Amino acid sequence: MSPPIKPIVYIISAPSGSGKSTLVNEILKAVPGLDFSISYTTRRPRGSEINGKEYHFVTRNEFEHMVRADAFLEHAQFDGNYYGTARRFLTEAAEKGTDLLLDIDVQGAAQIHQKLPDAVSIFVLPPDKKTLEWRLRKRGENDEQDIQRRLEAAGREIEEYDRYNFVLVNDKLEKSIERLEAIVLSERLRRENRELSPEENAIVERSERLRLANLKDKVQPIIASFRTPTASAHS
Image (cartoon, rainbow, N blue to C red; front, side, top):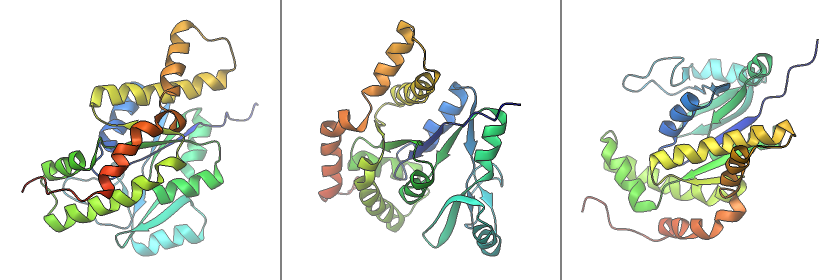
């Protein structure tokens, strides 16, 4: 019996409000054979969140027991709560012959890259700080203090963009879904080690345009918008 094929692990990170969750949901529908790792957390469920769907909600004692048992590929603390990616999702993906998508923050991404240097990392950026603030306000679920805290956190997180393989500026949702799909599919095509069709080559070329080295000029104004104080979007 041949050993299971090693899954491709895709890491996707983004500041809160960048539209990452929507992108993840859409790519899971669009690309077959892609599993999603549901993170564990010690924070309480919010609104209509269901255990085992948005997160696996566990107690602090349960989480710390999993840490001691080396059950996590990565874990981090944010805003007083633990978050972590269970190692079992990688094992299960290998057994099923699927690839694995991880939705994690920059701390977790750094840990994953240490353990899995072949992981494909994607950083999702908003078009600028003003747009991110507008999106956070549109949600209607955060007070002013929370919005400002998230914007400050976003400013710190986006400074880590250059640690990622790909950068995706989420300006128009449909285009962003197409770009993310190109990245996922092109990594699979590279693994196949065969001559590609013209259509497959087009996918790889589209993906290459999203590599960090090819987007640095486009990214700089976005980074600069977070370093310059802006007037409040609702003032």
